[in-house]
Structure formats: C-alpha cells, structure tokens
Image 1 (spheres, rainbow, N blue to C red):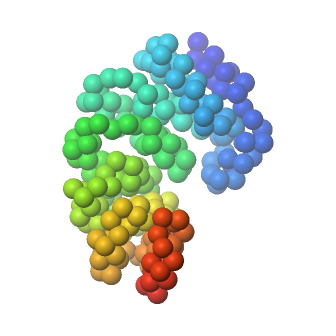
Image 2: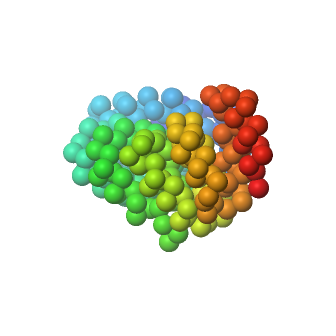
Image 3: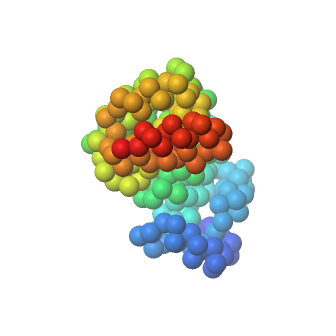
Length: 225
C-alpha cells in the first residue's frame, strides 16, 4: 500500500533535523525531517526491491517523498532515454534548492552530449526559477571541462533573472569554473553580462575556496563591482 512508504519515512524522522532543514529551506512547510544519507539508503532498498512498483506507490505531498523519488531515479538502472523521461517528469516537482541539488548530484550521467542537449531547454529565461537552477546545477556537476567551458559562459550571460536561487547557482557554477580553469574564467569575469549580484557572489565564492592562493584572492577582491 502507498501509505506504507510514507509510514516508513515518518519512522525515520528526526525532529531536530526537521527544524534544522526547515531553517535552510524557507517557505518549505512539508518537511518530515529525515537526514539525506538515511533517505538515500531507503531509496536503495526500494530500487533493489522493485523500482517501478515502489516508485509508483510514492506520493508527492511531502518534501521527503519528492526527494526519495528523485534519489530512486538516479539509482535505477534503465536505458538512458527512459531515464530522461523520468527526469523530465520529475522536474516540475522541484520547488526548493535542496531537492534540486540532491537530485542532480545523484543522476550519475554517462551520455554527456545527449544530456547536455536535454538540459538546454531548462536554461532559458522562459523557465521557472528551479527549472533554471536544475540546468545550472547539471552544468556544475557534469560539464566543467574544456569542451563545454565557452558554452557555460554563453549560457550564464544569457540568463537574465534575479531570483536568489538562480543567481546563487550561477555564482557557484562560475566559482567552480575558476577553480578548474582560472585563466579562462578570469577572462570571462573581465567581460561578462552577469548581474552585479551574481558577479560579486561569483568572486566571493572563489575567494572562499581553499584551493586558490592569497595572491589570487587579493586580485579578485579588487575586481568586485
């Protein structure tokens, strides 16, 4: 029965963690309070038992139910085209940064070129806040390499949105580009179309990294708008 999975989620809940996670996800009022590693272990059990049957049993009323379904999509073994359909159907349920980021990190993408073409449709100004964040976090997780670098900068220049979770994803993405490709990213930072907030946050996140020198950090501080 459907309620069995929900009952199990409630059994795994931690009241202190619920308060903590609720503080990190403002305006998310359906959190039960299950820690991510515990929920992921449960997802593994459900996938191993019977992915499709268990997936269909899970409702989408609670944060953890949505998170669980996202984890199961990442864990399940299936043809890539079929997985893309599951991803596409799941995206409308993403309504906060945590579900977005945990979902994306668990996808374990192998067919990169096909996946890149797939996520492009979520990286335009016509999409919702968390559709765009989904695309940006996918770039961050799977496409920080020389082949895609120019495309990433082109994408971040074309996104003209002032939602917090979009701009923070851009800043996070640019900071990781810098860690891996400092010269190319510095060149981009000197000539870009980022908003003042996204630009300064990008520099702040780079400076916060332990992987760059104090000399680099000092140069970056002087680049702030």
